[in-house]
Amino acid sequence: MLEGIIQAVCTSSGKGTAKEPRIEVLAKTQWGLDGDAHCGTWHRQVSLLSYDKVEAFRQQGAEVSEGAFGENLLVEGIDLATLPLGTIFMAGSVVLELTQIGKECHSGCDIFKKMGTCIMPTQGVFTRVLHGGVLKPGMLLRAYSKMRVFVLCASDKGYAGTRVDESTPAVCKLAEAAGYELVGTSLLGDDRVQLSAKMAEVCDGYQADLLLTTGGTGLSLRDVTPEATLDIAQRQVPGLSELMRSSCMHITDRACLSRSVCATRERTLIVNLPGSPKAAVENLNAILNPLEHGLLMLSGKSKECATLPSAGEQNS
Image 1 (spheres, rainbow, N blue to C red):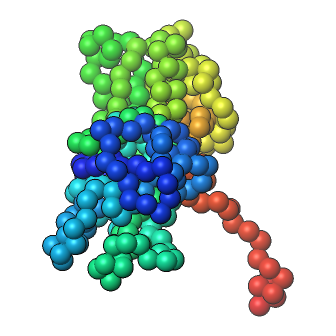
Image 2 (cartoon, helix red, strand yellow):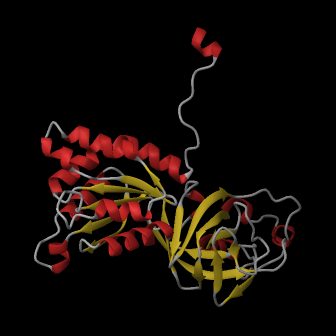
Image 3 (tube, rainbow, N blue to C red):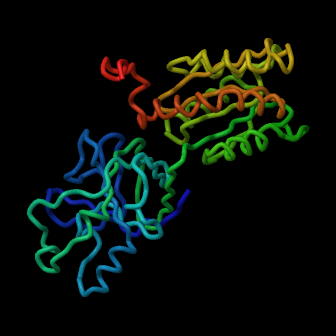
Protein backbone atom coordinates (compact mmCIF):
# COMPACT_ATOMS: atom_id res chain seq x y z
CA MET A 1 0.00 0.00 0.00
CA LEU A 2 1.23 3.47 -0.95
CA GLU A 3 0.13 6.74 0.60
CA GLY A 4 -0.04 10.20 -0.89
CA ILE A 5 -1.69 13.55 -0.22
CA ILE A 6 -4.24 15.17 -2.51
CA GLN A 7 -2.80 18.62 -3.21
CA ALA A 8 -5.60 19.86 -5.45
CA VAL A 9 -9.07 18.85 -6.62
CA CYS A 10 -10.00 20.41 -9.96
CA THR A 11 -12.96 20.42 -12.33
CA SER A 12 -14.07 22.17 -15.50
CA SER A 13 -17.40 22.30 -17.29
CA GLY A 14 -15.85 21.94 -20.74
CA LYS A 15 -13.61 19.33 -22.32
CA GLY A 16 -10.19 20.27 -23.66
CA THR A 17 -9.80 23.12 -21.19
CA ALA A 18 -7.77 23.65 -18.05
CA LYS A 19 -9.53 22.74 -14.81
CA GLU A 20 -9.94 25.06 -11.84
CA PRO A 21 -9.06 24.14 -8.23
CA ARG A 22 -12.04 23.66 -5.91
CA ILE A 23 -12.38 23.74 -2.12
CA GLU A 24 -14.16 20.39 -2.26
CA VAL A 25 -15.97 18.28 -4.83
CA LEU A 26 -18.51 15.49 -4.62
CA ALA A 27 -17.45 12.26 -6.34
CA LYS A 28 -20.50 10.37 -7.62
CA THR A 29 -20.54 6.59 -7.89
CA GLN A 30 -20.03 5.35 -11.47
CA TRP A 31 -20.22 8.93 -12.74
CA GLY A 32 -17.29 11.15 -11.76
CA LEU A 33 -16.74 14.51 -10.08
CA ASP A 34 -19.85 16.66 -9.81
CA GLY A 35 -19.80 19.45 -12.38
CA ASP A 36 -16.88 18.10 -14.39
CA ALA A 37 -17.12 17.67 -18.15
CA HIS A 38 -15.65 14.17 -18.07
CA CYS A 39 -18.47 12.69 -15.99
CA GLY A 40 -20.24 9.76 -17.56
CA THR A 41 -20.74 6.03 -17.57
CA TRP A 42 -17.30 5.28 -18.98
CA HIS A 43 -13.85 4.33 -17.71
CA ARG A 44 -12.21 7.78 -17.58
CA GLN A 45 -14.36 9.52 -14.99
CA VAL A 46 -11.58 10.96 -12.81
CA SER A 47 -8.01 11.78 -13.90
CA LEU A 48 -5.01 11.88 -11.57
CA LEU A 49 -1.54 13.33 -11.98
CA SER A 50 1.50 13.11 -9.71
CA TYR A 51 2.34 16.43 -8.04
CA ASP A 52 6.04 15.54 -8.17
CA LYS A 53 5.90 15.30 -11.98
CA VAL A 54 4.27 18.72 -12.19
CA GLU A 55 6.93 20.21 -9.93
CA ALA A 56 9.68 18.75 -12.12
CA PHE A 57 7.94 20.21 -15.19
CA ARG A 58 7.79 23.63 -13.53
CA GLN A 59 11.54 23.49 -12.92
CA GLN A 60 11.96 23.33 -16.70
CA GLY A 61 10.52 26.82 -16.86
CA ALA A 62 6.83 26.02 -17.36
CA GLU A 63 4.36 28.21 -15.51
CA VAL A 64 1.53 25.79 -14.83
CA SER A 65 -1.12 25.97 -12.14
CA GLU A 66 -3.19 23.21 -10.54
CA GLY A 67 -5.53 21.74 -13.14
CA ALA A 68 -3.57 23.14 -16.09
CA PHE A 69 -2.97 19.65 -17.50
CA GLY A 70 -6.66 18.80 -17.25
CA GLU A 71 -6.18 16.63 -14.17
CA ASN A 72 -8.90 16.24 -11.55
CA LEU A 73 -6.64 15.17 -8.68
CA LEU A 74 -3.08 16.32 -8.13
CA VAL A 75 -1.45 13.80 -5.78
CA GLU A 76 1.85 14.16 -3.94
CA GLY A 77 3.90 11.16 -2.86
CA ILE A 78 2.79 8.49 -5.36
CA ASP A 79 4.27 7.86 -8.82
CA LEU A 80 0.85 7.13 -10.31
CA ALA A 81 1.96 6.07 -13.80
CA THR A 82 3.95 3.14 -12.38
CA LEU A 83 0.92 1.49 -10.79
CA PRO A 84 -0.81 -1.49 -12.46
CA LEU A 85 -4.28 -1.33 -13.95
CA GLY A 86 -6.86 -2.33 -11.37
CA THR A 87 -5.13 -0.44 -8.54
CA ILE A 88 -7.65 0.79 -5.99
CA PHE A 89 -7.42 4.32 -4.57
CA MET A 90 -9.18 5.17 -1.31
CA ALA A 91 -9.65 8.67 0.14
CA GLY A 92 -12.24 9.04 2.89
CA SER A 93 -15.28 7.16 1.61
CA VAL A 94 -14.27 7.59 -2.04
CA VAL A 95 -13.01 4.51 -3.88
CA LEU A 96 -11.49 4.79 -7.36
CA GLU A 97 -10.30 2.04 -9.71
CA LEU A 98 -7.38 2.63 -12.07
CA THR A 99 -8.59 1.92 -15.61
CA GLN A 100 -6.09 3.61 -17.97
CA ILE A 101 -2.53 4.91 -17.86
CA GLY A 102 -1.70 7.80 -20.19
CA LYS A 103 -3.60 8.90 -23.26
CA GLU A 104 -2.98 9.97 -26.82
CA CYS A 105 -2.73 13.71 -27.37
CA HIS A 106 -4.40 14.34 -30.73
CA SER A 107 -3.98 18.06 -31.37
CA GLY A 108 -1.53 19.26 -28.74
CA CYS A 109 -2.63 21.31 -25.75
CA ASP A 110 -1.55 24.87 -24.93
CA ILE A 111 1.23 23.52 -22.70
CA PHE A 112 2.61 21.38 -25.55
CA LYS A 113 2.50 24.32 -27.97
CA LYS A 114 4.45 26.47 -25.52
CA MET A 115 6.91 23.93 -24.08
CA GLY A 116 7.15 21.39 -26.91
CA THR A 117 6.10 18.62 -24.51
CA CYS A 118 3.37 17.71 -22.03
CA ILE A 119 3.35 15.20 -19.18
CA MET A 120 -0.35 14.30 -19.10
CA PRO A 121 -0.22 11.85 -22.06
CA THR A 122 2.43 9.74 -20.32
CA GLN A 123 2.03 10.49 -16.60
CA GLY A 124 -1.71 10.98 -16.23
CA VAL A 125 -3.88 8.09 -15.06
CA PHE A 126 -7.62 7.60 -15.27
CA THR A 127 -10.12 5.99 -12.93
CA ARG A 128 -13.77 5.15 -12.45
CA VAL A 129 -15.63 5.88 -9.20
CA LEU A 130 -16.64 2.70 -7.36
CA HIS A 131 -17.93 4.53 -4.29
CA GLY A 132 -18.67 8.21 -3.92
CA GLY A 133 -18.07 10.88 -1.31
CA VAL A 134 -16.35 14.22 -0.79
CA LEU A 135 -12.82 14.93 -2.04
CA LYS A 136 -10.80 17.93 -0.89
CA PRO A 137 -7.17 19.07 -0.77
CA GLY A 138 -5.17 17.69 2.14
CA MET A 139 -6.89 14.30 2.15
CA LEU A 140 -4.84 11.13 2.47
CA LEU A 141 -4.99 8.94 -0.64
CA ARG A 142 -4.10 5.26 -0.31
CA ALA A 143 -3.23 3.11 -3.31
CA TYR A 144 -3.70 -0.68 -3.16
CA SER A 145 -2.31 -2.83 -5.97
CA LYS A 146 -2.85 -6.07 -4.02
CA MET A 147 -6.18 -7.67 -3.13
CA ARG A 148 -7.57 -6.06 0.03
CA VAL A 149 -8.82 -8.11 2.99
CA PHE A 150 -10.96 -7.13 5.98
CA VAL A 151 -11.31 -9.46 9.00
CA LEU A 152 -14.45 -9.47 11.16
CA CYS A 153 -14.50 -11.50 14.38
CA ALA A 154 -17.82 -12.55 15.93
CA SER A 155 -17.41 -13.35 19.63
CA ASP A 156 -19.57 -12.44 22.62
CA LYS A 157 -16.69 -13.00 25.05
CA GLY A 158 -14.18 -11.20 22.87
CA TYR A 159 -16.53 -8.25 22.47
CA ALA A 160 -17.10 -8.15 26.24
CA GLY A 161 -13.35 -8.23 26.87
CA THR A 162 -13.38 -11.52 28.79
CA ARG A 163 -11.48 -13.43 26.08
CA VAL A 164 -8.54 -12.42 23.91
CA ASP A 165 -9.31 -12.59 20.18
CA GLU A 166 -6.57 -14.83 18.81
CA SER A 167 -8.26 -15.76 15.55
CA THR A 168 -8.01 -12.30 13.97
CA PRO A 169 -4.19 -11.96 14.23
CA ALA A 170 -3.75 -15.56 13.08
CA VAL A 171 -5.93 -15.03 10.00
CA CYS A 172 -4.37 -11.64 9.26
CA LYS A 173 -0.88 -13.16 9.37
CA LEU A 174 -1.81 -15.91 6.91
CA ALA A 175 -3.66 -13.56 4.55
CA GLU A 176 -0.76 -11.11 4.43
CA ALA A 177 1.72 -13.95 3.88
CA ALA A 178 -0.46 -15.04 0.94
CA GLY A 179 -0.14 -11.58 -0.63
CA TYR A 180 -3.27 -9.81 0.59
CA GLU A 181 -3.30 -6.24 1.89
CA LEU A 182 -4.98 -5.87 5.28
CA VAL A 183 -7.29 -2.85 5.28
CA GLY A 184 -9.11 -3.31 8.59
CA THR A 185 -10.44 -5.50 11.38
CA SER A 186 -13.51 -5.42 13.59
CA LEU A 187 -14.73 -7.29 16.67
CA LEU A 188 -18.45 -7.64 17.37
CA GLY A 189 -20.64 -9.81 19.55
CA ASP A 190 -22.71 -12.70 18.18
CA ASP A 191 -25.48 -10.36 17.10
CA ARG A 192 -27.06 -11.19 13.75
CA VAL A 193 -28.20 -7.63 12.95
CA GLN A 194 -24.89 -5.99 13.89
CA LEU A 195 -22.85 -8.56 12.00
CA SER A 196 -24.87 -8.29 8.81
CA ALA A 197 -24.81 -4.48 9.00
CA LYS A 198 -21.01 -4.45 9.30
CA MET A 199 -20.63 -6.89 6.40
CA ALA A 200 -22.92 -4.77 4.22
CA GLU A 201 -20.95 -1.64 5.15
CA VAL A 202 -17.65 -3.20 4.07
CA CYS A 203 -19.09 -4.60 0.84
CA ASP A 204 -21.21 -1.63 -0.22
CA GLY A 205 -18.39 0.80 0.48
CA TYR A 206 -15.94 -1.30 -1.62
CA GLN A 207 -13.67 -1.31 1.43
CA ALA A 208 -12.26 -4.76 0.67
CA ASP A 209 -12.13 -7.43 -2.01
CA LEU A 210 -12.23 -10.23 0.56
CA LEU A 211 -14.14 -10.19 3.86
CA LEU A 212 -13.11 -12.96 6.24
CA THR A 213 -15.29 -13.62 9.28
CA THR A 214 -14.18 -15.73 12.24
CA GLY A 215 -16.45 -17.33 14.81
CA GLY A 216 -20.15 -18.05 15.06
CA THR A 217 -20.22 -20.97 12.61
CA GLY A 218 -21.00 -23.84 15.00
CA LEU A 219 -24.16 -25.25 16.56
CA SER A 220 -24.39 -23.01 19.62
CA LEU A 221 -27.64 -21.05 19.71
CA ARG A 222 -25.54 -17.86 19.69
CA ASP A 223 -23.71 -18.90 16.49
CA VAL A 224 -25.37 -16.72 13.86
CA THR A 225 -22.58 -15.67 11.49
CA PRO A 226 -23.83 -17.81 8.55
CA GLU A 227 -27.34 -16.40 8.97
CA ALA A 228 -25.98 -12.85 9.17
CA THR A 229 -24.00 -13.48 5.99
CA LEU A 230 -27.00 -14.85 4.10
CA ASP A 231 -29.11 -11.89 5.23
CA ILE A 232 -27.03 -9.56 3.07
CA ALA A 233 -25.60 -11.96 0.46
CA GLN A 234 -26.42 -11.57 -3.22
CA ARG A 235 -24.89 -14.84 -4.49
CA GLN A 236 -23.68 -17.93 -2.66
CA VAL A 237 -20.38 -19.70 -3.42
CA PRO A 238 -21.03 -23.13 -1.87
CA GLY A 239 -17.98 -24.81 -3.39
CA LEU A 240 -15.60 -22.87 -1.14
CA SER A 241 -17.51 -23.91 1.98
CA GLU A 242 -17.56 -27.52 0.81
CA LEU A 243 -13.82 -27.44 0.12
CA MET A 244 -13.06 -26.09 3.58
CA ARG A 245 -15.13 -28.79 5.29
CA SER A 246 -13.85 -31.67 3.18
CA SER A 247 -10.21 -30.56 3.40
CA CYS A 248 -10.34 -30.34 7.20
CA MET A 249 -12.13 -33.67 7.77
CA HIS A 250 -8.81 -35.54 7.84
CA ILE A 251 -7.73 -33.25 10.70
CA THR A 252 -10.90 -33.68 12.75
CA ASP A 253 -14.29 -35.15 11.97
CA ARG A 254 -15.79 -32.20 13.83
CA ALA A 255 -15.22 -30.22 10.66
CA CYS A 256 -18.54 -31.64 9.46
CA LEU A 257 -20.30 -29.56 12.13
CA SER A 258 -19.20 -26.27 10.59
CA ARG A 259 -22.07 -24.27 9.06
CA SER A 260 -19.75 -21.81 7.30
CA VAL A 261 -21.07 -20.19 4.14
CA CYS A 262 -19.33 -18.21 1.42
CA ALA A 263 -21.09 -15.57 -0.62
CA THR A 264 -20.66 -12.36 -2.58
CA ARG A 265 -22.13 -8.90 -2.19
CA GLU A 266 -21.25 -6.33 -4.84
CA ARG A 267 -17.54 -6.96 -5.61
CA THR A 268 -16.64 -8.43 -2.22
CA LEU A 269 -16.35 -12.13 -1.39
CA ILE A 270 -17.37 -13.11 2.15
CA VAL A 271 -15.86 -16.26 3.69
CA ASN A 272 -16.95 -17.62 7.10
CA LEU A 273 -14.11 -19.18 9.11
CA PRO A 274 -14.31 -20.99 12.47
CA GLY A 275 -13.56 -19.11 15.69
CA SER A 276 -10.63 -21.31 16.74
CA PRO A 277 -7.33 -19.76 15.53
CA LYS A 278 -6.04 -23.18 14.48
CA ALA A 279 -9.22 -24.12 12.63
CA ALA A 280 -9.52 -20.68 11.03
CA VAL A 281 -6.01 -20.95 9.57
CA GLU A 282 -6.59 -24.53 8.41
CA ASN A 283 -9.84 -23.58 6.66
CA LEU A 284 -8.35 -20.52 4.97
CA ASN A 285 -5.31 -22.50 3.85
CA ALA A 286 -7.62 -25.01 2.19
CA ILE A 287 -9.11 -22.43 -0.19
CA LEU A 288 -6.22 -20.02 -0.88
CA ASN A 289 -5.56 -21.38 -4.38
CA PRO A 290 -9.10 -21.17 -5.88
CA LEU A 291 -9.76 -18.02 -3.82
CA GLU A 292 -7.26 -16.03 -5.86
CA HIS A 293 -8.90 -16.90 -9.18
CA GLY A 294 -12.38 -16.26 -7.79
CA LEU A 295 -11.43 -12.79 -6.58
CA LEU A 296 -9.88 -11.92 -9.94
CA MET A 297 -13.13 -12.92 -11.64
CA LEU A 298 -15.27 -11.01 -9.14
CA SER A 299 -13.19 -7.84 -9.43
CA GLY A 300 -13.20 -7.98 -13.22
CA LYS A 301 -9.41 -8.28 -13.41
CA SER A 302 -9.74 -11.70 -15.04
CA LYS A 303 -12.62 -11.99 -17.49
CA GLU A 304 -12.22 -15.49 -18.88
CA CYS A 305 -11.71 -18.97 -17.50
CA ALA A 306 -9.59 -21.59 -19.26
CA THR A 307 -10.86 -22.48 -22.74
CA LEU A 308 -10.64 -25.63 -24.83
CA PRO A 309 -7.75 -25.77 -27.31
CA SER A 310 -8.54 -25.11 -30.96
CA ALA A 311 -8.65 -27.95 -33.49
CA GLY A 312 -5.18 -26.99 -34.74
CA GLU A 313 -3.76 -27.04 -31.23
CA GLN A 314 -5.36 -30.42 -30.49
CA ASN A 315 -3.74 -31.97 -33.58
CA SER A 316 -0.28 -30.46 -33.04
